Image 1 (cartoon, rainbow, N blue to C red):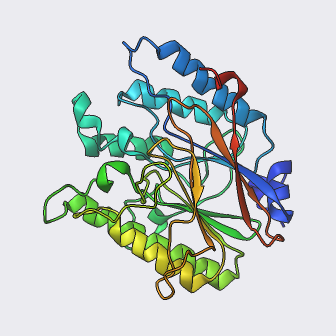
Image 2 (cartoon, rainbow, N blue to C red; image 1 turned 180 degrees about the horizontal axis):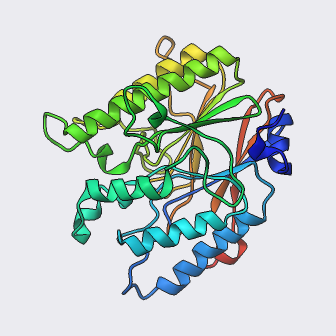
Length: 318
């Protein structure tokens, strides 16, 4: 039986029964009130929303960075209205531009994070005009302060978000990591482990993880660089590798952050040193390239996850 939120939704029903598609976007629009390109950038962003809305999708994920440099309440309220109007279920995970980087605009980062949580991650449903139920880390356990870490299923696949952001994951550059980072890092690791355990227990065909940060920062055409020290992503990269090897099924990590569309396999098997071919990383587009990524999921296919660009025709020449 379909969950009540899915009962009358064709795309949701398709996701429960077989193959389905997901759209992922983030890192846009990057505008300020005085930006000379403000209106064209906003028009390009709205074209992305319209293009996604016209697709037949099970759900949509926004991987953070709702803005470039403006952290105001009015900006957040505008994004909430846009997400509420999306005809598909929409799940959001925060980016650094929404809170860690807001000091440049005179805001307190933790106050901004509390605001983001209250607007975008409260309740046990997705955003969007059509909603789906979500499990949140805040539902119980040791990390009730992290409602942005969510989990849901479609086609038996386990999907989850992790609150991992750019700017070194807010770790700081000192020998001792800050308290905010330490607590959130522990929460993320616990939520990741729980998600993989759910997948193992339920016999899921695979796991997909969404976050903002690029854990494998690199330039185009190069292998991932060795992590710098101190590195705010080291624990998570190691745990993703361990869990993916242990699960032995397809794993996808989809993120934003560095605004460069790419699909690759950056994780090596710890025993053989060869590429772990069951693990795929995808980065979506970001400003000034205003497009999205389509994720096709087919539980019956040998290749569970497939990705392709969702190019917005109106934005190709912007």
